[in-house]
Each structure stands twice: as C-alpha cells, then as structure tokens.
Image 1 (spheres, chains in turn purple, orange):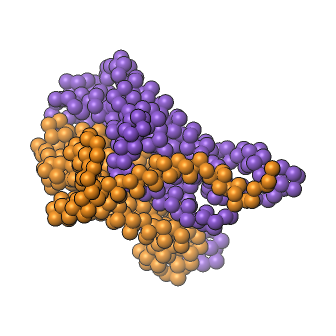
Image 2 (cartoon, chains in turn purple, green):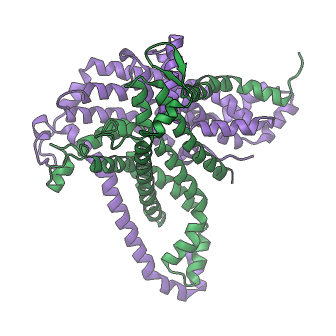
Image 3 (tube, one colour):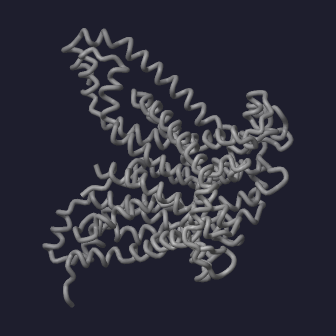
Length: 292
Length: 279
C-alpha cells in the first residue's frame, strides 16, 4: 500500500526511511520493557509453583529453577476442601451465567429493536449500575439476604453476582442485536410470524455466538468475584477466591508454592474462556456505547 | 386476545430484568443511602433515626484520610497503566507481530485474587523476589509509604493490558492516509503523534481513562488482600473503609453514611462518563 505512495513521491520515501527504523526500534524497546513488567511476575508464579519448599523458602531466591517438583499440584489434588470450593465456584458461576444471559437477552432485544417511553433512561440506568460501588451494595444485600433467610446460600451468591453480570450482558447483547438487520424481522412479520416467534426463531439463533460470548464473560466475572463470595456465602458454600484466602493466608507461614500452584489452576478456566473471547474483547469491555 | 402495542411488548420482555434490577440493585442502593441517617447495627435488630449525626462524625474526621488515600490510589492506578497501555498500544500498532497483544493480556485475564497472591509473594519481606533482586530487606507492605506504592504497582500490573487493548482498538480505526499525508508534508513522528494521533484518540482515550478511574475509585479486592487497608490505615480507601465499618465494626449507620458520601463523588464521575459515552 505504500508502493503507490512512494512511487509518486519518491523523495518522501528516502526522507522517511531512517525515522521509520528508529520508531521501529523504539517500539521494540517499549514492548520489551513493558513485557518484562507484564510477564516476569507470571513466570515467577509458574516457577514458584514448581519449586520444592526448601528452595522456595531460601533467600535470595534463585531466578532460574535448579530443581523442579510437581508435589504442590499433587497436594492440591488431595485437598478435599479445595474440591468443595471448586465445585461451589463451578455451580455458582455456571448458574449465574445462564440466568444472566436468559434475562438480559430479552431486555437487550427490547432495547435494541423497539422504541418506547422510558427506554433511554432505563438504558442509562443499566449502564450506570455497572459503576455503583459494590462494597456499599453489599452492606444492604447482606441485610436483605439475612432478612429473607437466603444468607449463606448459593441463591444469595448467584443473585449478588447478577448485580454485575446483568448490566454487562444487557450491554453486550444490545450491541449484538443491533447488528441483526431489522429487515429480517420485518420480513418475518409480513410472513405472519408473531413478534414472540420472530424473536425466538430468527433473532436469537442469529445472535447465538453473542449469547455464548456474553455467557462466558458472565462466567468469568462470577468466577473471579471475591468480595460478595467472601461475605455472603457460609463456609461450606464459599467459592475459590475467598476459599484460597482462608486456606492459605490465615496461617503463620503461608505455603507460597502451594498457593502459587492453586493460583495457576484457578486461572486456567479463565484463560481458556478468554482465548474464545478474544474477538469480543473490545465490545464486551466498554459494554457498548449509548446510541439511538 | 388483545394485541399488545410494541411498547407493551417491549416492557413484557424487560419485566424479568427490570424486576431483578429493582430487587438487587436499585432497592439495596436506596436502602443503603437511607440507612446512613440511622444508628443501626449489623448484628442487632432495630434502628434509631439520628439525622445527620453519622455524616457529621465522618466529616469531622475519618472521611478525609480515606478520601486522600482513595484519590492517591485512584490517580496512581489510573495514570500509570494509562501511560503504559498507551505506549504499548502505539508500539504494537506500528506493525509488530499480532500474537504479542494476546501475550500481554495475561496479567489482566487472571483472577483478581491470584494477582493479589502473586504480588503478596513478590513483595514478601523475608523471601520475596523483589527484595532478592534489589538485595534489600524492605517490608514493602508493612510501611505506610511503600504499602501504597505496592498496591498501586499491583493494580497497574492488572490494569494496563485492558488499557492497551482499548487504545489499540482506537488506533486501528485511525485512517493510515492521515499519517501518510502528514509525513509527506514533512511532519516528524512526534509532530504526527500530536496533530494526528492525539486528536483521533481523544474520545476513546477519555472514556478508557474515566472508566478505569471510576473502577479504581471503588476498587476493593487487591487492596483488601494485599494490605487490608493497613498499615495504620495508610491504604484504607472508601471500599475498604465501608467494608470494615460494616463487617468488622458492625456499624451499618456509619458504613452507609460513608458509602453515601462516596456515592455522591462517584455520581459526579458517572455523569461525566455518561455524557462522554453519549457524544
């Protein structure tokens, strides 16, 4: 693409060559320096998880592992308590994701395909609700769940997670439905399909990849939650994030290699989810722009 | 059966979402703001109306150090990742291999508690790799000055990839011809950045910065796991203070009053954000 340009303006090309190379060098320097900051801690997590205890607790630490062990991972596998946390995390995150996608799909469809009174202010409210302070919400959610007898239950966790997954999914899915051409729906209406039928047989199937993406985002957010699970779940229903804090950080001497091994395992599902989500990343993260 | 209007049909579709929204977001939030005017305990039933007493208590003391800590943390944990993310986005946009973008996402993708565990270990006073590299024996999380810096570094690490992704997406929508035309006119790299890139990126950069600022303004996880708000309250931000007052001090009145003041500040930021999103 620069060929046509440089052919018509040969002098510009010769003038530009050295600055272009210099900026290429600058770009690599930036990537290497920031990359070191970004990836060295991850390297350290993995190395620590593979280091035998006696070596991990020596100072100064050796940056390159001299001896590798998988004992921390096998120890994790033998810990029944951690399996309970894992099961809780899976149950709660999956149900949160499914519930959020179903409820928000209808809401997002209404936002996207109909024009009615109250639509715009409600959209703003949903967008703003993502920014409400969780710690404050938590205080009254705790009282609410306590009064209704839900405190400590899976239901309390799922409902509290929905406070952040619902707005996220609504915004993502509105963006998805916006890309489904309205002409398809009009054609269905002309063919005599009801609005209800059009929604289920045309719009939802077309939006299926978006529904899956929104569900995965909700799953990840639920999986990662710390403060709600810490406070609203009783010990038997605690998820992995607070569970790991209780298991490892309360002790006199934290078993760092075990904790790093556990951290590695907890991160895996999230990393896998994001590999699928790469192309939805930008849209899902801004949660859509207010338009229309 | 009478046919519903489009508006009625839309509200029917939204009904479950709206009901959920009212029950678990709107009601608790309003209830929280109301509780600020009462003296109420987390563990004992009943409450007494005390008017503005809770607010007066807070504004006469605790509110100010918490506001200061929150602002220091929020500014640090927003400005630094923004700059890192911007530099990285510019670098990656200059034709470096695409897999690098994915590689840089790791710190942002892994769960928040894992981030906290990892940096707790790095900052560990006895066996930590940071002290090992520097040849020091500093208790990074045990002293007020370094604790705040450590918390900011940790949050920066977790946030800059998101900034990079968003800013890179912005850069990629910039027409290449603009840069080429400016180059033909003899503008150098810095001049082109200032007169082509910056104006193009103004919208997205503003939104990304503001969103991150709002998120940090109410950030909880990293601070709570790393320092618990200590030492001596040096990293106690609004989120940690509200949490501790409610769930360790059992004092719902002061917790929600502080939350109310916090919410007012957040609302101002939110209005700014919604205006920006709309434009």
